Image (cartoon, rainbow, N blue to C red; front, side, top):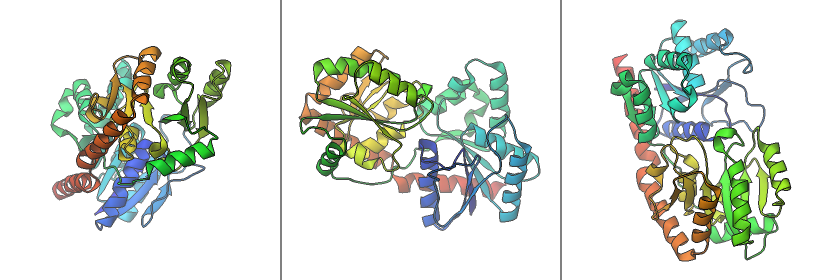
Length: 371
């Protein structure tokens, strides 16, 4: 099969990396992948080996760009694409538009989040989303919470909405070595305990809450250090917040990091405080490095964190409560290690790359056979 994977940008971020990993496994199974970015990424471009790599022309300047839709139509028709996977709402819009322009192919929409959050009660947004989703042949959610949210918003889509978990690549890094190297790199003491966060510095990821958490933790244990990896519109604001609170030695901004595995492995805990998530891939990636998570309950978090078994779930956005959960786990090394091992076993069994790639492959075959 020739499968077109359409992503917002060919960048090193959650949804794109998930689609990239799936595409890599599909290539191993003998399929041809067309790896297309809706908008150009100007640095650290996520390339896919043994695939056609391309960006559609034009920046993101308007709600709809006819030139982009026509360019996508040309790719679909010229290459003879069999099926399109649209990873994100923006990509679904152009996959549907290309079909309306004459390049109709089966469309799989990968639902990575909660559609209700992005509509925020807007009748117009709901109408637009409904129009597009009705034109997808299948909607595949990352987890049950995302699926249930989709069906609650659009009951008519229930029959064509399902769950296929993402596959998490097996990539083990020695934790002792990783911790030592992180401490050397950031001039941390041997007594330091490392808390790690990775994501976009954006409102929905709520990075400012972690500054408030660290204000509390500093009083509990001055050796706890938070490393924050990523970039985004709130980066400068968070820098200023850290300086205003006098936490420059407690919170270190690492900037964008292409390879996060050494950070996951070297950390004692991973933390997540987002306002919106589907199934957080960062928690799964940390689990692959035997690092448990302390997280707020959001989206499908309870699908990937078993309370007091593979991590700790805090059921509110109170910085003090979150700090208490972190402090308790940081104070119990044996419990952390046991949670990390159980988290690793969980992700190996439920988020197996080969199993979930096979589910996508079967879905594509069903759609192409009936088209």
